[in-house]
Length: 480
Image 1 (tube, rainbow, N blue to C red):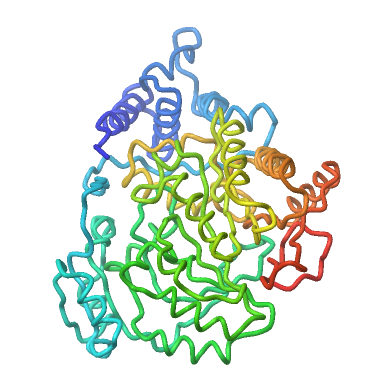
Image 2: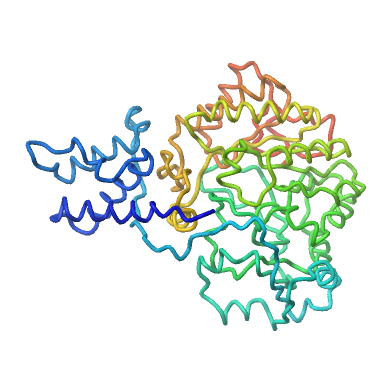
């Protein structure tokens, strides 16, 4: 992806425009005004100077209060029209180009594999050496020591993480509860913490905030996870490996999926999920399973995949892979998360839902999750620095109920309602849950489901998989 040079010129011109037009403004006022000018200019595809046209009164500029109100009205038209309380996040503009990510589809990775001394003798490392013939292997005393010696790491290091794999022996951090956002209704998910770091490049990925990592981290001692799980498990548990890494993107190298499936064959009251944006399913198709394994795909329109989910499989490849896994007896899950709002979002997402159900029967779907674009405020600047020509930040995003950047609540409700309408045209007997939404949104959406005469739930009589705790279901006591 080439650098969109005009974005840096747009930033510079926005700052210069405010400096020259409003020399009396202090630093904070200039920061807010130039940020709003930049975002409006980028969103509307016009020059920064054209944003100020029409704001002169009797030949003089508006004062700061009136200027800010005028710019808010233009930057957040939906919120202004619906008289919503605005909590925007307007950080200082950054002109530094050093952190821009260049996408190279021919890139071969990893280039370096760093192995902890304690992990060097594991069979997993021998397997990697055999499969990663072009990579250089380096022995390090410990991962923690390497991080301490080489920290701090920058976004430039994060951009190069695909080149550097770190293999280590995990000692204690085997599992954790899914870090559900404050005030949101959780789904009861647990994380099998086998890897940290993803080789895909998604503009919205929250892992970009964790630039204190030197590369992709992979635990070598899977057997210790298995031992620890026997004490950690509980009936009806849902867990998976797809929270801090893509579950299958590296499976052709790690060969972990058959071992995981074989292990969880012994725990039929536990549901294990592989969550992916890949089409790497060869190992899955060879494995024998007992019905408690769910293979899930993150779905978006191809136009969004092309601009925001670099290196990942196409929508067609994901749905074809899902169809093959269902033929092999697996249940499939689908995550419309994040749903990214645009002018034609309804048409584009309806197409995806229709394509999904043309490839996979509702009877073979374990669950569908819905979640709209959201992220911590500090990620906004990271996205701008790594992906300067992104368009996801052009949406109306401001601080929500959990202090994360979100679309306004009425807009999110409309998105969920429409998505449920699309799903209900194919089946009204299916588990759908909302990801990281508060109780008010759940209540409103459940009322909308009643209006659709839907009984959306997970048909537990046909499968061994457990239901998410926050499934929009008539069965309020479902295990999760």
